[in-house]
Image 1 (tube, one colour):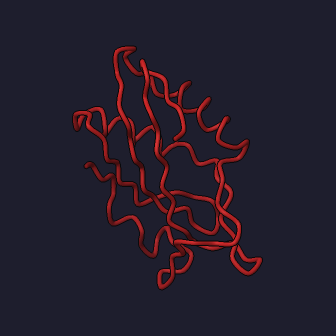
Image 2 (cartoon, rainbow, N blue to C red):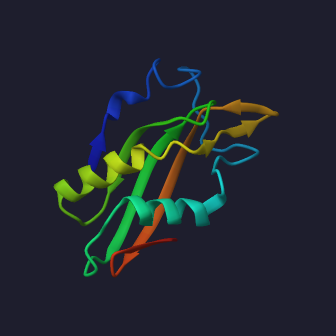
Length: 122
């Protein structure tokens, strides 16, 4: 597992440092949905065609839709994980989750399958 700025879930990124939701009434989402996220990932992160495996990315989406606190778990080497997370962290096109009609900080997990160098949602 590789973590990029594991301590970024701090005062500088979380809107409410005392409360991060794990379950919300309206889930956070990437603007344009999962299809757009996959297009953006496939357009920004070049993978060798022989790569296959599953990746899990845990991160915080704050009340403003900004992400931080990334943790990446895969069977790939650390250099790949670092490159993937650095590029993934630049995709800041998220809508915050909502609870009681308020935008809130929430934890989010994304699981991707990589087949022949292309990412797919699980």
